[in-house]
Length: 441
Image (tube, rainbow, N blue to C red; front, side, top):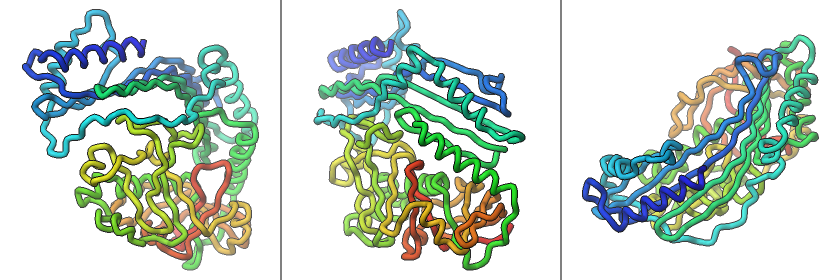
């Protein structure tokens, strides 16, 4: 069905380059990005699988967008709906709608010429088989989680598998079709301890054991009270909290348009000079070339080949992430684009495994969740947040729950020579060990 829609849209837009629409405009160039996927999902609510709150479902989803540059220099962005492929659909009227929404853009982006597309593994055949042939392993995985759950603990869980096809085409000759898959599993214990997995492949038994083991240990630790924090207490962000901070502060300030419009913490001149603004051991990049990662892809929706893009190198500004339009304004080539926060990779020279780093922490507190991060100013980097689900660490041992408030500056955390990270093969982001302020609630 999706392929039919792609062909129809291609024919309509190509014809629009030869003949004017009903509103007298002709298409100069165009680009489309259309995807169709089957999504299988199921869940557990309050220890009950498949309840009215989390019923199993299998559905087809089609979505897409179109970018049109008209002969008078105006441009249009539009969405593509599955209804478009219905028999008798009025494409002429739809072109008129897109033309009515056309606008002038002094920085109008042209449609790039096709370039070689790298091979990136974003499909796992076993996920496609789960959807096309045998759903049972999905429900067996949920049942396994339910069976693992300790007595008296309230469990919520969700699993999602998807398999689809993506089509990126343009008037310049680009025509790429590639399959992809996704697998996401998450759970929470007593609505306090949450954990999960999200990649383009199924979770392994080793990963399930490790993630579940972390959840059980944390949930048990929350049953005890820890000692109050002090002024010297180190604050440790879990990988999920690290990811939230990166999404809040990095996404806004390393967006090329924000930099160009003066709405970023950093200026164009600072990037061009490679100014050192962070700790010399800090590295941050986008790398969509990694196999079967959630944030990986072979090309962007604009048709730009995937590539590794360093944003920060040795603590120095290297590049923002740039779309075609913003790259033209910058005077350089487009970069990789992050698939949300999942596309960001943070590394630090001062690092170790989580198990080893934890043993060395004499006085610390692990922040498992925060409230209100989205309300904080991403440009200043400052924050003041409640962290009611935190765990005290004394001499390398997790001792119990504490309710705290944290405050500080994310930019100062990344700049400080005292900041370090700790890695775990189970998580995409590292633990972030900081000297930010913590006080009891």
